[in-house]
Length: 168
Image 1 (cartoon, one colour):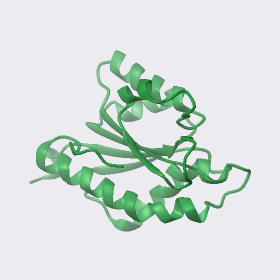
Image 2 (cartoon, rainbow, N blue to C red; image 1 turned 180 degrees about the vertical axis):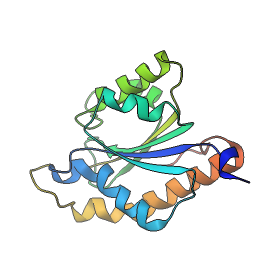
Image 3 (cartoon, rainbow, N blue to C red; image 1 turned 90 degrees about the vertical axis):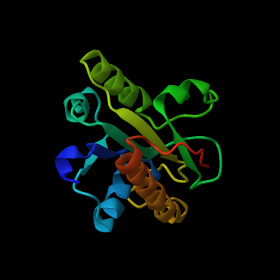
Image 4 (cartoon, rainbow, N blue to C red; image 1 turned 90 degrees about the horizontal axis):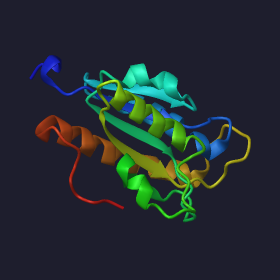
């Protein structure tokens, strides 16, 4: 199957790399880059950018976001959800400091005619103080997250959709 017939997949790492674990999404992109991905998978460092990302995601079929999520649980806990599920999260959950920015980006892309199917992987941070080093708890979840993202890519390649099973 040629790359032209495969779905366009973007994996975007979001977060502020100057606030330790808050930058886990961006830091995780290094793991993905080293792992080698299919040609139809693009990596994008979203940082803390907002609406300027709209034009970058409009041509994408599937978007996978990786970000910190403050869920008041054990550091390194991993979450998998879709943007529409944000409304069911308890009020004390905070999907990073730029949650509204990402949701707005998706809404504007939809208004402009195309928002990609989106899946979010969130990691519970341990340390969000100034610094560029990730905590060991967050780094320890990277191999599992890499495995889950590979499964999502495989499901998209085979079925044209994200995996259906629920994961913790």
